[in-house]
Length: 263
Image 1 (cartoon, rainbow, N blue to C red):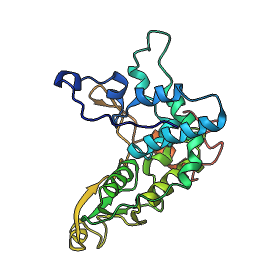
Image 2 (image 1 turned 180 degrees about the horizontal axis):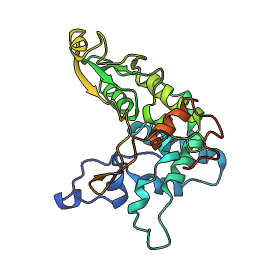
Image 3 (image 1 turned 45 degrees about the vertical axis):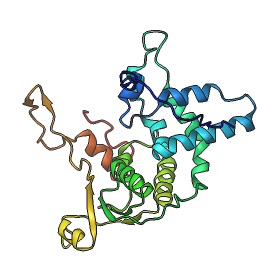
Image 4 (image 1 turned 135 degrees about the horizontal axis):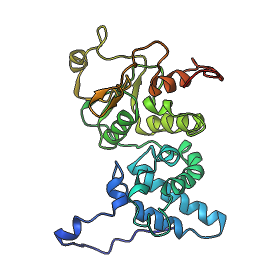
């Protein structure tokens, strides 16, 4: 639908290179938010033609962030710094991205592998959460041979702590599975690095030239007020939010478990 035209060499003054819109600055991966917002606004009214444009936008976003369909459900940090926040309200970027995600999710299943010749070194990624998956994808694009070591029986890490009403399970499963497939990364589940014989030294002896550690946050943070620890956290029956989400995601807390209890 849209075509990129290279008109030759271009340059910008150093001062201009320093300026980025506040929404892009707020984005953890520095996504070019304004560009895709404009492309969405330019989608034609014809459904078939619009779908072609959506696929192009999706391809652009996916190349830079293969987890963008998930972000369309749970993120929205850029909205906190939107220039229009006090001029009618922030642009609902999360919903715009979800619009693209909902139409692009089926395209991911048919998306071809990166097809990059893996001529560079072996790299071990410890942890299959968002950071580990992004690292594996980016390194695979650059020609490295990547192996993900995940301690649990599934990839996704803390993303599984997000309730299904906010992030549907089928969306998360599809995005993660296809990311690994497209990146052509090897995956070792139930492989807890640091326990038994699977140590960092063992990984080095096995030929991994670099190790990226992204083990996430396995334990909840202690509650504090100012600099003081909140009293009573160690009492029986006290559960941290992260613990509750973990137990729910693993099916250990059934519906109605907290009914009649003081929360």
